[in-house]
Amino acid sequence: MAVILVTDNSAMDTLQDWLAHCERLHPKTIALGLERVQAVAQRMGLKFDCPVVTVAGTNGKGSTCAMFEAIALQAGYRPGVYTSPHLVHFEERCRIGGEIVQADALLPHFERVEAARQGEALTYFEFTTLAILGLMAASNLDVAILEVGLGGRLDAVNAIDTDCAIITSIDLDHMEFLGPDRESIGREKAGILRAGKPAIVSDPMPPHSVLQYANALGADLWLLGRDYNFNGDKQQWNWAGRGRRYSGLAYPALRGANQLLNASGVLAAFEALRQQLPVTAQAVRNGLAMVELPGRFQIVPGQPTLVLDVAHNPHSVAALTANLDAMGFYPTTHAVFGAMADKDLAPMFAKIGPLVDRWYFTGLPTARAATAADLQARWQAVPGRREVPTSTHASPKEALQAAVEQADPADRILVFGSFFTVGGVLEQGVPRLAAKHLG
Image 1: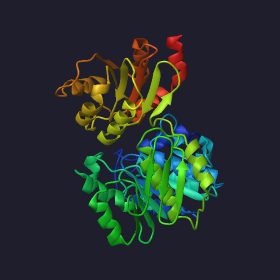
Image 2 (image 1 turned 90 degrees about the vertical axis):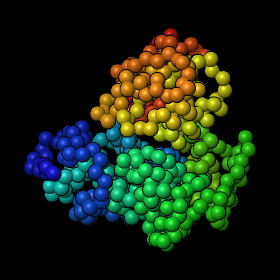
Image 3 (image 1 turned 45 degrees about the horizontal axis):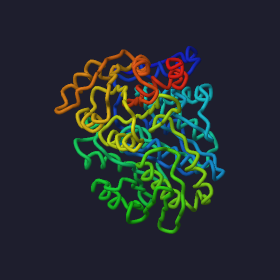
Image 4 (image 1 turned 180 degrees about the horizontal axis):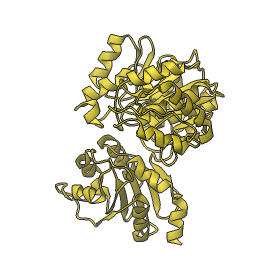
Protein backbone atom coordinates (compact mmCIF):
# COMPACT_ATOMS: atom_id res chain seq x y z
CA MET A 1 0.00 0.00 0.00
CA ALA A 2 1.39 3.41 -0.93
CA VAL A 3 1.77 5.80 1.98
CA ILE A 4 1.75 9.46 1.10
CA LEU A 5 3.73 11.74 3.34
CA VAL A 6 2.95 15.43 3.39
CA THR A 7 5.75 17.64 4.56
CA ASP A 8 4.22 21.01 3.79
CA ASN A 9 0.81 21.92 5.16
CA SER A 10 1.10 25.57 4.18
CA ALA A 11 -0.91 24.88 1.03
CA MET A 12 -3.87 23.74 3.16
CA ASP A 13 -5.68 27.05 3.61
CA THR A 14 -9.30 26.01 3.20
CA LEU A 15 -11.58 23.14 4.11
CA GLN A 16 -11.70 22.16 0.42
CA ASP A 17 -7.89 21.91 0.39
CA TRP A 18 -7.98 19.54 3.35
CA LEU A 19 -10.80 17.43 1.89
CA ALA A 20 -8.88 17.07 -1.37
CA HIS A 21 -5.84 16.01 0.67
CA CYS A 22 -7.93 13.40 2.53
CA GLU A 23 -9.12 11.92 -0.76
CA ARG A 24 -5.54 11.29 -1.89
CA LEU A 25 -4.20 9.47 1.17
CA HIS A 26 -5.63 5.97 0.85
CA PRO A 27 -6.18 3.83 -2.25
CA LYS A 28 -9.63 2.73 -1.04
CA THR A 29 -12.77 4.72 -0.27
CA ILE A 30 -13.78 2.21 2.41
CA ALA A 31 -11.23 0.21 4.43
CA LEU A 32 -12.84 -1.06 7.61
CA GLY A 33 -10.65 -1.54 10.69
CA LEU A 34 -9.90 0.39 13.86
CA GLU A 35 -6.13 0.03 14.17
CA ARG A 36 -5.21 3.11 12.11
CA VAL A 37 -7.85 5.34 13.70
CA GLN A 38 -7.09 4.18 17.26
CA ALA A 39 -3.38 4.81 16.81
CA VAL A 40 -3.91 8.35 15.51
CA ALA A 41 -6.63 9.12 18.10
CA GLN A 42 -4.24 8.05 20.85
CA ARG A 43 -1.50 10.31 19.54
CA MET A 44 -4.06 13.15 19.37
CA GLY A 45 -5.04 12.52 23.00
CA LEU A 46 -8.64 12.33 21.80
CA LYS A 47 -11.14 11.87 24.63
CA PHE A 48 -14.57 13.17 25.65
CA ASP A 49 -15.39 14.67 29.04
CA CYS A 50 -19.14 14.20 28.56
CA PRO A 51 -21.50 11.27 27.94
CA VAL A 52 -21.17 9.76 24.46
CA VAL A 53 -24.22 8.34 22.65
CA THR A 54 -23.36 6.18 19.63
CA VAL A 55 -26.02 5.32 17.03
CA ALA A 56 -25.72 2.41 14.58
CA GLY A 57 -28.25 0.73 12.28
CA THR A 58 -29.27 0.52 8.64
CA ASN A 59 -32.13 3.04 8.69
CA GLY A 60 -33.22 5.72 11.16
CA LYS A 61 -29.76 6.73 12.43
CA GLY A 62 -29.93 10.34 11.27
CA SER A 63 -33.47 10.78 12.58
CA THR A 64 -32.50 9.26 15.93
CA CYS A 65 -29.52 11.60 16.26
CA ALA A 66 -31.65 14.62 15.32
CA MET A 67 -34.37 13.78 17.88
CA PHE A 68 -31.85 13.16 20.67
CA GLU A 69 -30.17 16.48 19.82
CA ALA A 70 -33.49 18.39 19.71
CA ILE A 71 -34.58 17.13 23.14
CA ALA A 72 -31.13 17.85 24.63
CA LEU A 73 -31.29 21.42 23.28
CA GLN A 74 -34.74 21.95 24.76
CA ALA A 75 -33.46 20.64 28.10
CA GLY A 76 -30.81 23.35 28.11
CA TYR A 77 -27.84 21.16 27.22
CA ARG A 78 -25.08 21.83 24.70
CA PRO A 79 -25.03 18.78 22.40
CA GLY A 80 -22.58 17.98 19.64
CA VAL A 81 -23.62 15.76 16.73
CA TYR A 82 -21.56 13.95 14.13
CA THR A 83 -23.47 12.42 11.19
CA SER A 84 -22.57 11.33 7.68
CA PRO A 85 -22.78 11.65 4.77
CA HIS A 86 -23.77 15.25 4.09
CA LEU A 87 -26.41 16.42 1.63
CA VAL A 88 -24.84 19.60 0.23
CA HIS A 89 -21.95 20.94 2.34
CA PHE A 90 -19.36 18.94 4.28
CA GLU A 91 -19.88 21.13 7.36
CA GLU A 92 -23.38 19.62 7.76
CA ARG A 93 -21.67 16.57 9.25
CA CYS A 94 -21.13 18.37 12.56
CA ARG A 95 -23.45 20.48 14.69
CA ILE A 96 -22.47 22.14 17.96
CA GLY A 97 -25.23 23.53 20.16
CA GLY A 98 -27.71 23.01 17.33
CA GLU A 99 -25.66 24.99 14.78
CA ILE A 100 -23.76 23.61 11.78
CA VAL A 101 -20.04 24.22 12.32
CA GLN A 102 -18.16 26.80 10.29
CA ALA A 103 -15.51 25.55 7.88
CA ASP A 104 -12.79 27.65 9.53
CA ALA A 105 -13.48 26.03 12.91
CA LEU A 106 -12.53 22.64 11.45
CA LEU A 107 -9.15 23.66 10.00
CA PRO A 108 -7.03 23.41 13.19
CA HIS A 109 -8.44 19.95 13.83
CA PHE A 110 -7.49 18.74 10.36
CA GLU A 111 -4.00 20.03 11.17
CA ARG A 112 -4.02 18.06 14.45
CA VAL A 113 -4.92 14.85 12.61
CA GLU A 114 -2.20 15.44 10.02
CA ALA A 115 0.39 16.01 12.73
CA ALA A 116 -0.67 12.86 14.62
CA ARG A 117 -0.98 10.75 11.47
CA GLN A 118 2.80 10.27 11.16
CA GLY A 119 2.49 8.84 7.67
CA GLU A 120 -0.47 6.56 8.43
CA ALA A 121 -2.62 6.18 5.31
CA LEU A 122 -6.09 7.09 6.59
CA THR A 123 -9.17 6.92 4.39
CA TYR A 124 -11.18 10.08 3.71
CA PHE A 125 -13.79 8.95 6.23
CA GLU A 126 -11.22 8.11 8.92
CA PHE A 127 -9.34 11.40 8.57
CA THR A 128 -12.46 13.57 8.51
CA THR A 129 -14.03 11.61 11.39
CA LEU A 130 -10.98 12.20 13.57
CA ALA A 131 -10.98 15.92 12.70
CA ILE A 132 -14.66 16.31 13.62
CA LEU A 133 -14.27 14.26 16.81
CA GLY A 134 -11.34 16.47 17.73
CA LEU A 135 -13.47 19.59 17.27
CA MET A 136 -16.31 18.09 19.30
CA ALA A 137 -14.02 17.01 22.14
CA ALA A 138 -12.72 20.60 22.38
CA SER A 139 -16.19 22.20 22.33
CA ASN A 140 -17.25 21.93 25.98
CA LEU A 141 -20.21 19.67 25.23
CA ASP A 142 -22.79 18.24 27.62
CA VAL A 143 -23.36 15.22 25.34
CA ALA A 144 -21.73 13.90 22.16
CA ILE A 145 -24.03 12.13 19.68
CA LEU A 146 -22.11 10.03 17.15
CA GLU A 147 -23.64 8.36 14.10
CA VAL A 148 -21.78 5.31 12.81
CA GLY A 149 -20.88 5.56 9.13
CA LEU A 150 -20.90 1.89 8.09
CA GLY A 151 -21.59 -1.15 10.24
CA GLY A 152 -20.30 -0.53 13.74
CA ARG A 153 -17.61 -2.90 14.97
CA LEU A 154 -14.92 -1.68 12.55
CA ASP A 155 -16.24 1.82 11.86
CA ALA A 156 -13.97 4.74 12.76
CA VAL A 157 -16.60 6.13 15.16
CA ASN A 158 -16.23 2.98 17.28
CA ALA A 159 -12.75 4.11 18.31
CA ILE A 160 -14.62 6.16 20.94
CA ASP A 161 -16.15 4.20 23.83
CA THR A 162 -19.87 4.87 24.16
CA ASP A 163 -21.85 5.57 27.34
CA CYS A 164 -25.11 4.61 25.63
CA ALA A 165 -25.51 2.75 22.33
CA ILE A 166 -28.62 2.89 20.18
CA ILE A 167 -29.16 0.32 17.41
CA THR A 168 -31.91 1.34 15.00
CA SER A 169 -33.60 -0.87 12.39
CA ILE A 170 -31.34 -3.41 10.68
CA ASP A 171 -31.75 -4.38 7.05
CA LEU A 172 -29.74 -5.65 4.10
CA ASP A 173 -27.32 -2.97 2.91
CA HIS A 174 -23.54 -2.80 2.32
CA MET A 175 -23.53 -6.60 2.29
CA GLU A 176 -20.10 -6.79 0.64
CA PHE A 177 -18.66 -5.29 3.84
CA LEU A 178 -21.06 -6.45 6.56
CA GLY A 179 -22.22 -9.93 5.53
CA PRO A 180 -24.98 -11.62 3.54
CA ASP A 181 -27.89 -11.57 6.02
CA ARG A 182 -29.43 -9.69 8.96
CA GLU A 183 -27.68 -11.91 11.50
CA SER A 184 -24.22 -11.09 10.11
CA ILE A 185 -25.07 -7.41 9.75
CA GLY A 186 -26.57 -7.29 13.26
CA ARG A 187 -23.36 -8.68 14.73
CA GLU A 188 -21.38 -5.89 13.04
CA LYS A 189 -23.79 -3.23 14.36
CA ALA A 190 -23.59 -4.71 17.87
CA GLY A 191 -19.86 -3.98 17.89
CA ILE A 192 -20.62 -0.49 19.26
CA LEU A 193 -21.97 -1.96 22.54
CA ARG A 194 -19.90 -1.75 25.72
CA ALA A 195 -19.99 -3.89 28.86
CA GLY A 196 -22.22 -2.50 31.59
CA LYS A 197 -23.46 0.36 29.39
CA PRO A 198 -27.05 0.83 28.11
CA ALA A 199 -27.75 -0.81 24.75
CA ILE A 200 -31.03 0.50 23.31
CA VAL A 201 -32.42 -1.60 20.45
CA SER A 202 -35.22 0.20 18.60
CA ASP A 203 -35.59 -2.47 15.89
CA PRO A 204 -38.83 -4.27 16.86
CA MET A 205 -37.49 -7.58 15.49
CA PRO A 206 -33.73 -7.44 16.09
CA PRO A 207 -31.43 -10.19 14.81
CA HIS A 208 -30.55 -12.79 17.47
CA SER A 209 -26.89 -11.92 16.94
CA VAL A 210 -27.47 -8.50 18.55
CA LEU A 211 -29.13 -9.99 21.63
CA GLN A 212 -26.56 -12.76 21.96
CA TYR A 213 -23.65 -10.34 21.73
CA ALA A 214 -25.22 -7.88 24.19
CA ASN A 215 -25.89 -10.62 26.73
CA ALA A 216 -22.45 -12.21 26.35
CA LEU A 217 -20.81 -8.80 26.74
CA GLY A 218 -22.88 -7.84 29.77
CA ALA A 219 -24.42 -4.71 28.23
CA ASP A 220 -27.58 -3.25 29.80
CA LEU A 221 -29.97 -4.34 27.04
CA TRP A 222 -33.18 -2.34 26.45
CA LEU A 223 -35.61 -4.08 24.10
CA LEU A 224 -38.77 -2.64 22.57
CA GLY A 225 -41.73 -4.56 23.96
CA ARG A 226 -39.81 -5.70 27.04
CA ASP A 227 -38.06 -2.68 28.60
CA TYR A 228 -39.99 0.08 26.87
CA ASN A 229 -43.07 0.39 24.71
CA PHE A 230 -45.27 2.85 22.87
CA ASN A 231 -48.82 3.09 21.56
CA GLY A 232 -50.93 5.80 19.99
CA ASP A 233 -53.95 6.90 18.00
CA LYS A 234 -54.33 9.42 15.20
CA GLN A 235 -53.90 12.41 17.50
CA GLN A 236 -51.17 11.48 19.97
CA TRP A 237 -48.94 8.73 21.33
CA ASN A 238 -47.69 7.42 24.67
CA TRP A 239 -44.38 5.95 25.82
CA ALA A 240 -43.48 3.87 28.87
CA GLY A 241 -40.03 2.72 30.01
CA ARG A 242 -38.52 1.07 33.06
CA GLY A 243 -39.23 3.94 35.39
CA ARG A 244 -41.02 6.69 33.51
CA ARG A 245 -44.04 7.33 31.30
CA TYR A 246 -44.96 10.04 28.82
CA SER A 247 -48.57 10.36 27.74
CA GLY A 248 -50.35 12.56 25.22
CA LEU A 249 -47.21 13.25 23.15
CA ALA A 250 -47.58 15.00 19.81
CA TYR A 251 -46.17 13.07 16.89
CA PRO A 252 -42.55 13.92 15.98
CA ALA A 253 -42.11 16.72 13.47
CA LEU A 254 -40.21 14.26 11.26
CA ARG A 255 -42.86 12.66 9.06
CA GLY A 256 -43.50 8.96 8.64
CA ALA A 257 -44.92 6.17 10.78
CA ASN A 258 -41.43 4.69 11.25
CA GLN A 259 -40.36 7.78 13.25
CA LEU A 260 -42.19 6.51 16.35
CA LEU A 261 -39.72 3.60 16.51
CA ASN A 262 -36.84 6.06 16.38
CA ALA A 263 -38.42 8.44 18.90
CA SER A 264 -39.12 5.55 21.29
CA GLY A 265 -35.47 4.49 21.18
CA VAL A 266 -34.41 8.06 21.92
CA LEU A 267 -36.70 8.26 24.97
CA ALA A 268 -35.31 4.93 26.19
CA ALA A 269 -31.77 6.33 25.85
CA PHE A 270 -32.65 9.42 27.89
CA GLU A 271 -34.24 7.18 30.52
CA ALA A 272 -31.09 5.04 30.63
CA LEU A 273 -28.94 8.19 31.01
CA ARG A 274 -31.26 9.95 33.47
CA GLN A 275 -28.50 10.27 36.12
CA GLN A 276 -26.14 12.09 33.74
CA LEU A 277 -28.67 13.85 31.46
CA PRO A 278 -32.00 14.40 33.19
CA VAL A 279 -34.69 15.89 30.93
CA THR A 280 -38.15 17.22 31.67
CA ALA A 281 -41.36 16.09 29.99
CA GLN A 282 -41.63 19.58 28.48
CA ALA A 283 -38.18 19.26 26.89
CA VAL A 284 -39.27 15.94 25.36
CA ARG A 285 -42.50 17.45 24.01
CA ASN A 286 -40.81 20.54 22.59
CA GLY A 287 -37.85 18.65 21.17
CA LEU A 288 -39.97 16.15 19.27
CA ALA A 289 -42.24 18.93 18.03
CA MET A 290 -39.34 21.06 16.71
CA VAL A 291 -36.90 18.50 15.31
CA GLU A 292 -35.78 19.03 11.71
CA LEU A 293 -33.79 16.83 9.34
CA PRO A 294 -33.59 17.56 5.60
CA GLY A 295 -34.10 14.69 3.19
CA ARG A 296 -36.12 12.38 5.47
CA PHE A 297 -39.60 12.30 3.96
CA GLN A 298 -39.24 16.06 3.61
CA ILE A 299 -42.24 17.69 1.97
CA VAL A 300 -41.50 21.01 0.28
CA PRO A 301 -44.53 23.34 0.18
CA GLY A 302 -45.85 24.46 -3.19
CA GLN A 303 -47.33 23.08 -6.37
CA PRO A 304 -46.63 20.43 -7.43
CA THR A 305 -45.97 18.76 -4.10
CA LEU A 306 -42.28 17.88 -3.74
CA VAL A 307 -41.09 14.98 -1.55
CA LEU A 308 -37.40 14.40 -0.75
CA ASP A 309 -36.16 11.17 0.82
CA VAL A 310 -32.73 9.51 1.05
CA ALA A 311 -34.31 6.02 1.03
CA HIS A 312 -31.82 3.80 -0.81
CA ASN A 313 -32.31 0.22 0.41
CA PRO A 314 -35.31 -2.14 0.44
CA HIS A 315 -36.34 -1.44 4.04
CA SER A 316 -36.24 2.37 3.76
CA VAL A 317 -37.98 2.29 0.36
CA ALA A 318 -40.75 0.15 1.88
CA ALA A 319 -41.20 2.80 4.61
CA LEU A 320 -41.15 5.56 1.98
CA THR A 321 -43.81 3.71 -0.04
CA ALA A 322 -46.08 3.43 3.01
CA ASN A 323 -45.60 7.13 3.76
CA LEU A 324 -46.37 8.11 0.17
CA ASP A 325 -49.47 5.90 0.21
CA ALA A 326 -50.72 7.73 3.30
CA MET A 327 -50.43 11.16 1.61
CA GLY A 328 -53.66 10.76 -0.33
CA PHE A 329 -54.44 10.99 -4.03
CA TYR A 330 -52.26 12.69 -6.66
CA PRO A 331 -53.09 12.42 -10.39
CA THR A 332 -49.48 11.65 -11.31
CA THR A 333 -46.37 10.79 -9.27
CA HIS A 334 -43.08 11.71 -10.98
CA ALA A 335 -39.99 10.00 -9.49
CA VAL A 336 -36.42 11.32 -9.78
CA PHE A 337 -34.08 8.48 -8.78
CA GLY A 338 -30.31 8.02 -8.55
CA ALA A 339 -28.41 5.34 -6.63
CA MET A 340 -25.08 3.59 -6.12
CA ALA A 341 -24.30 0.72 -8.49
CA ASP A 342 -24.17 -1.90 -5.72
CA LYS A 343 -27.74 -1.38 -4.45
CA ASP A 344 -30.31 -4.19 -4.50
CA LEU A 345 -32.75 -2.39 -6.79
CA ALA A 346 -35.21 -5.17 -7.70
CA PRO A 347 -37.09 -5.26 -4.35
CA MET A 348 -37.00 -1.44 -4.18
CA PHE A 349 -38.54 -1.10 -7.64
CA ALA A 350 -41.08 -3.85 -6.90
CA LYS A 351 -42.23 -2.01 -3.78
CA ILE A 352 -42.44 1.58 -4.99
CA GLY A 353 -43.11 0.88 -8.69
CA PRO A 354 -46.92 0.71 -8.38
CA LEU A 355 -46.98 4.31 -7.09
CA VAL A 356 -44.76 5.84 -9.80
CA ASP A 357 -46.31 7.10 -13.05
CA ARG A 358 -43.16 8.49 -14.65
CA TRP A 359 -39.45 7.84 -13.93
CA TYR A 360 -36.55 10.28 -14.32
CA PHE A 361 -33.33 8.32 -13.80
CA THR A 362 -30.22 10.34 -13.04
CA GLY A 363 -26.49 9.90 -12.96
CA LEU A 364 -24.58 11.09 -9.88
CA PRO A 365 -21.19 12.82 -9.43
CA THR A 366 -19.34 9.81 -7.97
CA ALA A 367 -17.65 6.79 -9.53
CA ARG A 368 -19.64 4.45 -7.24
CA ALA A 369 -22.97 5.50 -8.77
CA ALA A 370 -24.99 3.59 -11.33
CA THR A 371 -25.45 5.43 -14.62
CA ALA A 372 -28.90 6.73 -15.50
CA ALA A 373 -29.04 4.26 -18.41
CA ASP A 374 -28.18 1.38 -16.07
CA LEU A 375 -30.93 2.37 -13.64
CA GLN A 376 -33.39 2.57 -16.52
CA ALA A 377 -32.36 -0.90 -17.75
CA ARG A 378 -32.68 -2.37 -14.27
CA TRP A 379 -36.18 -0.91 -13.94
CA GLN A 380 -37.16 -2.33 -17.32
CA ALA A 381 -35.92 -5.77 -16.19
CA VAL A 382 -38.39 -5.88 -13.25
CA PRO A 383 -40.94 -8.67 -13.89
CA GLY A 384 -44.54 -7.43 -14.08
CA ARG A 385 -43.53 -3.77 -13.86
CA ARG A 386 -45.92 -1.02 -14.92
CA GLU A 387 -45.49 0.31 -18.45
CA VAL A 388 -44.79 3.96 -17.68
CA PRO A 389 -42.65 6.62 -19.39
CA THR A 390 -38.96 6.78 -18.38
CA SER A 391 -36.13 9.16 -19.21
CA THR A 392 -32.43 9.51 -18.34
CA HIS A 393 -30.62 12.63 -17.16
CA ALA A 394 -27.05 13.64 -16.41
CA SER A 395 -27.71 15.17 -12.98
CA PRO A 396 -30.41 15.40 -10.29
CA LYS A 397 -30.89 19.06 -11.18
CA GLU A 398 -31.64 18.22 -14.83
CA ALA A 399 -33.89 15.32 -13.82
CA LEU A 400 -35.89 17.54 -11.46
CA GLN A 401 -36.17 20.24 -14.14
CA ALA A 402 -37.59 17.68 -16.55
CA ALA A 403 -40.07 16.47 -13.91
CA VAL A 404 -41.17 20.03 -13.11
CA GLU A 405 -41.76 20.73 -16.81
CA GLN A 406 -43.91 17.59 -17.16
CA ALA A 407 -45.85 17.93 -13.90
CA ASP A 408 -49.23 19.58 -13.42
CA PRO A 409 -49.74 21.68 -10.26
CA ALA A 410 -51.83 18.91 -8.64
CA ASP A 411 -49.13 16.26 -9.21
CA ARG A 412 -46.44 14.97 -6.88
CA ILE A 413 -42.69 14.88 -7.57
CA LEU A 414 -40.63 12.43 -5.54
CA VAL A 415 -36.83 12.76 -5.38
CA PHE A 416 -35.25 9.75 -3.69
CA GLY A 417 -32.27 7.42 -3.51
CA SER A 418 -28.69 8.33 -2.67
CA PHE A 419 -27.69 11.34 -0.58
CA PHE A 420 -26.14 12.60 -3.82
CA THR A 421 -29.59 12.55 -5.46
CA VAL A 422 -31.37 14.53 -2.76
CA GLY A 423 -28.32 16.73 -2.11
CA GLY A 424 -28.04 17.52 -5.82
CA VAL A 425 -31.58 18.89 -5.71
CA LEU A 426 -31.29 20.73 -2.38
CA GLU A 427 -28.13 22.40 -3.67
CA GLN A 428 -30.24 24.28 -6.21
CA GLY A 429 -32.69 25.72 -3.69
CA VAL A 430 -35.70 23.52 -4.38
CA PRO A 431 -38.65 25.84 -3.75
CA ARG A 432 -37.15 28.56 -5.99
CA LEU A 433 -36.42 26.06 -8.75
CA ALA A 434 -39.98 24.77 -8.77
CA ALA A 435 -41.46 28.26 -8.60
CA LYS A 436 -39.33 29.45 -11.53
CA HIS A 437 -40.61 26.72 -13.83
CA LEU A 438 -44.21 26.90 -12.71
CA GLY A 439 -44.45 30.64 -12.87
